[in-house]
Length: 218
Image 1 (cartoon, rainbow, N blue to C red):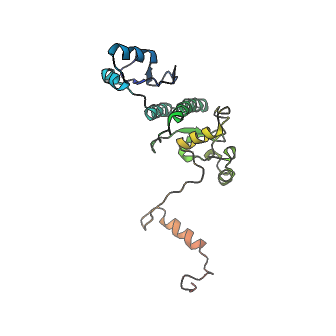
Image 2 (cartoon, rainbow, N blue to C red):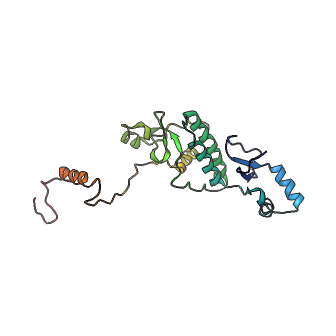
Image 3 (cartoon, one colour):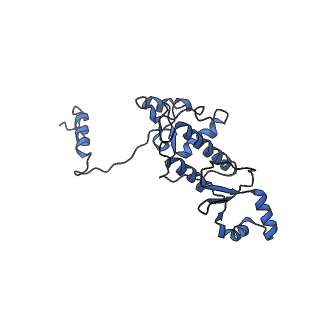
């Protein structure tokens, strides 16, 4: 029996069996049942069938909705282990791979934090991490040599060694892994917390031996 609070979707046409964690609040209507209902209701399209099944909260397949449900499911665990993170990425990558066959995968919302494994085995938000030498990005590897938790673990660690590297790279970029260091703009005022620190930094690093724009020396 399926609980009433379960997210129920029509099974994608190209999947005989769509596997997700049993504990996840997502179920798929079997494709054979869908075909039976279409014939029984004499409906020619899924849209018309979905109107009939609206009472049972059955929805059209939604890549983003399912993906975000998977991420929230694992993020909700109290002590997420490396093995569980790998398991999550196995499901996410499978979903992404299928979606990429049809079209460009839709972007994740900025507030979605996809926990990932770093090169030193730590777990952190993908949006705080970067591609390193395992992905041909030597520069970022060197820049963050002081903090390996910012560098993404190799695709072998994730169990993607038999997958095409190009697709794996696109997947990791999709969840938020960056190629180059991120930057953010901070508006400073005399009341800002970092104002005095920034002022001291500028004064300490200014080269007073060079003239200003008017060829004047300080």
